[in-house]
Image 1 (cartoon, rainbow over the protein chains, first blue to last red):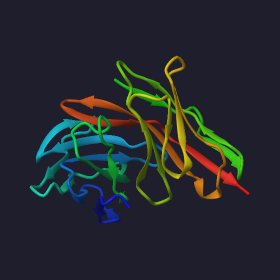
Image 2: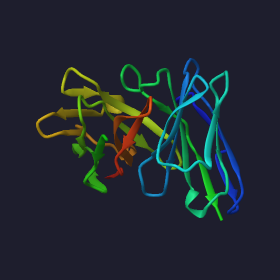
Image 3: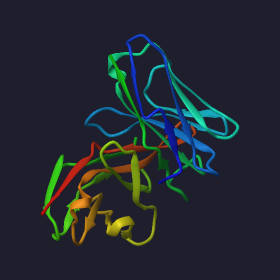
Image 4: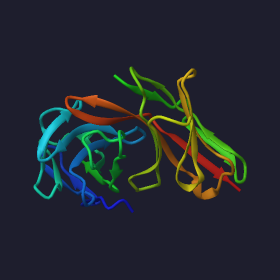
Length: 116
Length: 115
């Protein structure tokens, strides 16, 4: 177990709705990144939060937004859901903005989102 | 931008035989490379990383990886495969966007170990 927990584990939403996914990072980790993993593909970087501020974003539209709280937990919000948003959403925490330099990123088990 | 490629969608190995899962990389500068494993309905589990130093990196569950700069490769290996090693394996490279450091993943290789 990595100590990174995500909720809920599964979710079904209707096209056009909004969804909030949650992530509790590993103790002592101040950086959270979110990834989208579509079926049969590798995870794609959505954005990263460091000390409550977004400090980098992948190629995702503005309807994907997030928050990081003082305890370093995080939320991913997706508005106006589309069918293509169906995927596994992974949260990763690390103790540095630069995972890999001295530490790796630890992933949660993911939230499986299905948009119908 | 940094990238990695996993040329094999699936690798089949008999239990007890050695296994290799291939990864090649394309980076500017020094590569920071990773292997992760994903079991069904689970998140990604870290196996090992290469930052600098020895070209042979040892990781979790008996896995190791060989960094080869001349061939720009970072293949994952295990001397003796187990049925329980059957899973989806991802190679990744550290990349940057804005002031963030992210992981850029390959498309994954499914490892099937049979009795």
